[in-house]
Structure formats: C-alpha cells, structure tokens
Length: 431
Image 1 (tube, one colour):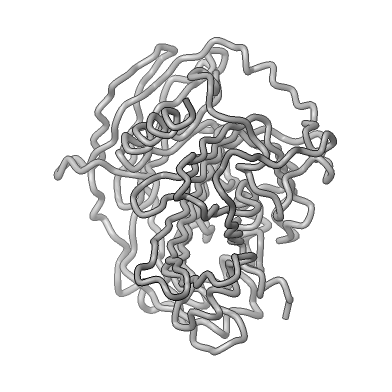
Image 2 (image 1 turned 30 degrees about the vertical axis):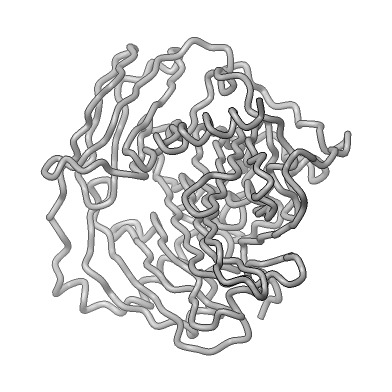
C-alpha cells in the first residue's frame, strides 16, 4: 500500500510570530512564469451576471455551475448565489447554461450581448431513477465499473486549463487572511490515473493579511493551488478510487438524483476498517448511462482525532494544542463533447487551537476553492521548477491587494457580501 496515503492532501502550517508585516522573499527563479499564449486576455468580451435561486422557495443556491456549453469557460455561484461570467465576443456564444444537482438546467440566451442582474430560477427535478432497478445493483460493483471506464470517459489528451483559486482563513467569524490567484493547470491524460506529471503555476495573485497584533497565529495552507492536482479524485487513486482501498469501505445505494438533466446513481461510503491513518466518508455521483464520476462529496473521518491531526497538520508552535473539527471536500466534473473534465473543487478545514493553561480555545476555518474557467489542448508542460510546490503557501508568493481591476478579463468566483466587507476592513488596517 502506498505510503503517500498517510500524507493526505490538506497540509496546515501554524506559525507563531508577532504580526503579519513580514513576507518571505521570493527566489528569483520561482518568480518566473512559463510563457503561455494569452492573446485572448485583451479581447473584448460580454458579461453575464446575476443570482441563482430555487424556483419554489426563492432560496439562493450556492456552487451552481454557470458555463458556456461545449467549452471549458465557466464559473460557479458564490455562497450568496451570485455569479459573473465573462465571455469573449469572438466565441460568438449564443447561450449560457446554468445547472445544479437536483435541478433541471436552464439555458440563458445571450446572442453576443451583455446581460446583468439576472434572476435565474432553477426548477427542482423530481424525476428520479426507478428505485427497484437501482437497488437491485451492487453499489460497489457500480463504483468498480465506473473506475474501469475512466480511460474512455475522461480526457485522453494533455490539457492546459486556466483556473481561479481563492483561500481564506477566519478566526471565529473574522477574516484574517484572503489570498486569490489566476492559475495555470497542466493535466496529462486520465488513462494512467497518475498525477505525478500534472503541474500548477500561479500567473497572478494577491493577498490581504490581518495587521492586528492579537492575530499572532498564522495559519498557512500549504500547496493550496495544487487542489486541482491532488484532489482530482478520479485521477489520483491515493484519495479514494483505488481497488486496493475499496475493501476498507462499505458502500450503500442512496436516493438517485438528476444532474445536468441526466440520471445519476448516488453511492455513499463509510470506513469499515481500522488502519494506521484516517479514511474518508461521503458520496459519489455516477452518471447512469456513461458510468462517469461527476461529483464527489467527502470528508475525513474524525473517529480518531490523532489520526486526523497527523493527516493535515505539518507544523505548530510548542505548547499549542490543536483539535481538528472538520475536513471536507467537494469535487465536480463536467462533460464536453463526450469527454469529462475537472470543473470545481472546494475544501473546508475547521479546527480549534488553545495554549496550555488557557481557559478558552479559538476556532479557525480555512476555506479554499478552485474553478476551471477556460482550457485548451496543451502543447508543452509546465516545467517543474516553475510549478507551485506542495510545501509552498500562496500568501507567501503573491502581492497585496491594490488595483480594483486586478483580474481584467479573467473569470473569477464572485466574492460574497461578507468577503467584500472583510476586504474593506483589512485594507483599512494597512493604512
């Protein structure tokens, strides 16, 4: 069994210093960026923006896919259900598709013009699979069959994707770190189920750190932008989909759902073995016809807190007590012309820290998310020496917030109202 399993994707480094004013100097070699054709960066574009809600309850829907059909161009709604999508005019796109699990997708006609402040209402889809047929099949067999079809269902080419990555750290409810970046993601074919040659590099990014003297515990998420490599559960067997690991889980068929107007199996899994390291529990969503994995929701099992701590904590100050509360993931994929591609990843880590002899503990939450916003076949790979390393922290590699038009024509995940407010407060601290 591979030793890498003991080193699960999330790595936290807790550092104790007197403030946040010092930023580690960068190695000049690390500041290089691979030359990539960005001719589309200066093209004129249209913008489609609005909010997505449940048609019946009018509840705002988070993490809804907003894409240009047949392309990798897209984004997701934020926690307030809001989105903004930029589409280059030369694409001559006629529609934008809005889709979410358990809902009928809807197409927004754009016909080459900007549309803003849309209210998109998604209708719940209750047309479920025939339960008798579904429950007659062994869920583990379905998972194994879907695994054998990965080479046929997923990209068979080298691809270079553009993505937007954001990570935030909160102390209680207050933001103490906000880092964002446009990233390049190089992915090799899925047939080998190997991520060793996949690479990420940061094209441009920015950060805001708290200046409060009381915020002396720096929480760093190491290798954050590499979510797009190591948390690609379909391609990285060290997470879930390895036949050697399947016997350690119990699988159960859950109520099926519709996703992108297609029937999907929903298969839950929980650990059924005690190993030297923590396992996961969650749900897999599998397209019934294509048998492709389209969504994975899972979290680190917390039955043994020591194992969970060993999985995620790399460094902490002496005397600091660390208690993990939650480590959860959401991974989604989308189908384009018969092949499936990585679309969106979200990770949340919650924990408490306190010092010995102190009465109260402090709660921290680390959120990170990455969305693929564009892509094309790759002619060359990102060199290893220019790639973002798993031992690096994004907040050490990017500059401070300054220009409000920083992202230009690039698609991002719209900031929530609370995040916008936090940016304003952290900016005031720096004046």
